[in-house]
Length: 354
Ligand SMILES: [Fe+2]
Ligand SMILES: [Fe+2]
Image (cartoon, rainbow, N blue to C red):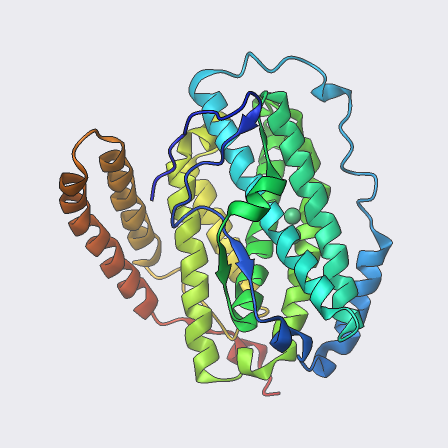
């Protein structure tokens, strides 16, 4: 669970950090099932969302202004490394969204025109986001060869149901991450060390809209929220997304500190808000107020930091493995206990039995 910085292959082209269980992935899905989804239960909502997407409020937003035109050499050492890693990770996850949406749009064309156009417009947004981040990396004399990555990365297959749960959550968590950083820097402009953060307010509205589209998709499929299985899957995906978040934020603690944010506080706020938001789409939300919830997540992150440390050591592979094993077991054990914390029934809170 560690990212290592490999050597540069060509000047200016950054070789992507090693893929790990925590790095953003590229996804593929069952396009046949996606094309045959019956959306009638949420058709009005989806049509309204399509109109919003067509309005393209951020058409002129992703334009680099003159504040970018300066040298960034003064950001150096550990803060430079941490910031580049942040840009890279964000760029790959935006680009991963672009690839999936573009492919969905292409495969659904002619079969499901409403969804095909919605995915086409979401791909438009994600391409802008990824491009903007890659240009920012260019300011640090690095960029990702996205076309090359498209061909060489492995694609993870997710059934369309999993895609709906996970993309919904990643859009909403993305929204909260961007807006919390933006609001923090509004109050502490002295920590705004690079202009990209000023773009986060309108940017996160794109993610919010994408999340709402996936909410409509989720609610159009009763098997994704009405059944006991849906409750178990919802708990699973909520916990997976929150764990990944907690672990990566603490692995990149220096970046958050450079913004004047406390990494643990930031992580908790993002998890809390995303969980509250998800309660509007999912049949359950996690009980973040449970006295064991955040402490156990934190314990997973502490064990993970130990794993990172072991990975960075120069010990033989087998020694590393033996040292890592009990920590991995401890993470799995804590996650199991977290999964078993009774969730909050959001359908009952809505008071609706549809
Ligand atoms: Fe995005
Ligand atoms: Fe998005």
